[in-house]
Each structure stands twice: as C-alpha cells, then as structure tokens.
Length: 572
Image (cartoon, rainbow, N blue to C red; front, side, top):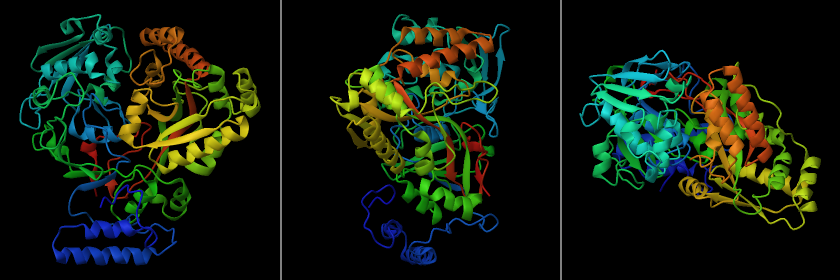
C-alpha cells in the first residue's frame, strides 16, 4: 500500500490508519517492527481523536540529537522528471538542486551570488558583456569524470535545441545568439556567445548588459548535464530520455540519486566525488511526494517528516497558537493565478476574461481558505522592495464584471458556454476552485465545471493547451520583474495560454536591453498594464511561504525565494 498521498484510505482511527500501513508494510526484523508499533500506538494514544495540539515533533530543546543526518522532506507531489532542462516545477527543483550545480552558488542567507559552485571565480569585462568563468580543477561528476567547460557548452546547446522543447530555453536568451539558435535562424552553435576557452575556462558573451545575470546562473536551466550519459539512454535532443533513473543519473552536485520509487519516495545520498564534500553534513535527503496537505501535516506531527511543503489552512492558527516554533510564514516571490486558454471559446473573448477577473473575492479566499497572510493580487508580478512597486491594475468589482460580461455578448450569463477550471491534486486548489466556481455562478450566472488531474497529466494538459482555465502559480527564479514578465512573450515556453501581443513583446525586449534602472522599471509597468488589460492570466494572490519545520533543521534561512542550498542544511 502507498501510504503517502493516498486519497482512499479507510476511515479508521481518526484517519490515521496510514501510520499502521507504514508499519505493516515494513520488511524489517520483527523486534524492530514491534518497537515501531509500540511507538506508533503511543503516538496515537497521546494524540487522541479530535485533539488539535501538535505533539509528534517536539518543541525546541526537547529533540534528541539525530543519530543520522537524514532529512525527511515533504515535497508536495511526484516529480515530473529529474532532467534539469525539461522540468519546470518547484518539487522538481528541490531534488535537482541537490543532484547538480551550475556555475555560481548562492549565499544561504540572502542568496546573493557567491563562488561556491562549479566556478571558483569569474571575471567581467568593462562593458559588462563578457563573463569568464574559471572552473574548479577538482570538480567531478558522480562517475568520476572531470567537469569541463565543454560540458557546459554542450549542455547549453542541448537546452537551446528546439526539438527538446524546453519551456525554460528562454532563460538563456540573454546570451548572444541563443534566441536565434533556438528559433533556427542561427545554424552554427559556435556562433553563439558560449565558448570553451580550455577545459577549465568558460566564456559567456551577452547580447546586452544584464544586471541579474549572475543570479540567473543559479537556476536549474543553467545546470550542466553529463552528455555521454544522456546519449547512452536516449536521443540527446529529444524528450523521453531515461537517463534520470536510479543507477543511471550522473550529476555534479553534493548528492547522488540513490532511489526513486514512483509516488513513494526519492532518496538522495551524499556524493563522495563532490568537490566540496567536506561542507556537506546531510548524509541523505528523503523526498516524500505527499499532495494531500492533511496527510502531510499528520506525517510531520508524528515525526515522519522534518519539513512540510505547506500547512493546511485549517491548521495555521492551531500551530500559531500552540507551537509557533514549528510554523514558518514568510513573504514569497510568487503569484497564484489562473491561466486562460485564449485559443478556444469562451476564453478567446477578452471582455469575458476581464469579467471573470473582476468577480473573484480574493480577500475571502485568503481569509477562509489559505489563512497564512497572503495578499490579494491585482497584477502578475509581486512587489520587490526598493525595486518594483505594484499599482492597482484592476479591482474586485462584481458590478463592473457583470457589465463586461454583457459587453462580451452574454448578458446575465445567457448563452455563455460552460467554463472549466483545471487544477492539480491538492485540497487547497480544490477549495479555491470551488470558491471561485460559486463566485462566478453568483455574480455572473455562468456554469463552471471543475477538473482535477494528477501533476504530470496536468502539466502536460497545459503545455498542449488542452484546457479552458487552469490553475497555475509562478515563483520568481530571480529577484527581478523580468522573471514574471518574459514568460508571457509570444511563444514563451511558460506562456501556455496561446496569447500573443506585439506591443507587449516589444516592451519586454526594450526592458531587457535598457541600462537605466528607472526607465527599465517604467517599461515593465507599462507592459504589465497591457497584460492586465488583455487578461490572459487572472492573478488571485501573492504567496507567503508557509510550512512546518522541525527546530532541529538548521541552515534553512528564511528568504523571499525560498531557496536553500542543500550543502548548507543539517540536523542539529
């Protein structure tokens, strides 16, 4: 039986039967079995049916020192893949960032770029167009091969090859010739700005000064892959390659892939070939794909997890009052929103899209469902302190929504085709979809159907535009508005709405080459005004990052991107 994430458990012992499933499914010696059974039974007795006080993970000072450095991590859902040039989700990034590393590291506290990854130092030309990275001579792949500059060049060529259909290929477009090569107008990759000067020197030439370039390099789209391994298990420039399976994966990061049981667990073990292995304290990281928030919270409460992906909205206040030391809530550079497929009816009607946006009571969703300090979103990009401020680009205004619906040709909702909301498996996504379904029925008198899909299917449906309205979220890859804005350009790999606007494309291009920071932010503001006028996306709220964390977990400093380099994390 699969305990974590199961949606059809027997209603036994206050739905904590999953705990006994774990025990009964164990193949360990009987003495240990009975010890675990007694511990589990004790936990259930202490907990009792209906008691809301978290007790399994102890308060600070009460936790015994762990005998092994094994981190148990609730990862939300089953990963789509572990190929850094194919995946797009946060659950995948959590794992991939332990298996691979790029040119530049991030300070664990504030994430500023530091030379703690594959490059030991770098030089920047006076015109800020050419970056020269000096790779570590002792950097190795997990199979013992040296990490070379050509590994990066060939990886970037794979990333930019159109047949791979990488949604994140545009992350490399800041480099000279990268976009043209991806589009097929530049045939020779040697003419791009990537050059291996020698085995340990990589040169990257940009097409324009890019202030956030070094921060970009920490993103998984810039990670290298071990080309010989990729070629061994499939076609280099096509999807469906099986090189990421256990026993095959070759990485250059602090951990190696030891185990991947579908829908059960992904296990990473410390890599003995990693150049900075002495810094790495964790021996293993166990990623548990638990997409049921209540199940995940119970796993934390009973000591099965050290860290959860999220906290059920209904439990936030309980932990805030009873165990505040276990609850972490911080601002997060992310937006929860709905995509609209503008290539099919009724999403191809701009007035209808605007009507839908005006008839979502965002504050009610935050107050009644998410309950963790999120903020209503009336723009796609969240504010960035001291850099980018938001304007109220539209509002919650049901009267205006009804007027727009009439202008769209559906007065009082008459004649409007049913709208379908697609979401991936999650209690919160379901509750939000149900709330919006009721709001649109009440305010606009339109019928809304809900469709739930598992993560991999849901990702594929949106990529193929096989949806009407789809739940989505975007977490900034780096602290700049461009991280949100450039994904909506025509044909952008993460656009996936079918929307295209030449004026928007022009403004995003102008911002990408603008050196004056004030003019650059003003251009982004104008672009976002246009985006919210066209409404191919409907923002709902700006995230906070909320999860449960055992006080013994150290090195995971709160930050707005919620990125925590695994090499600095340990158990106290």
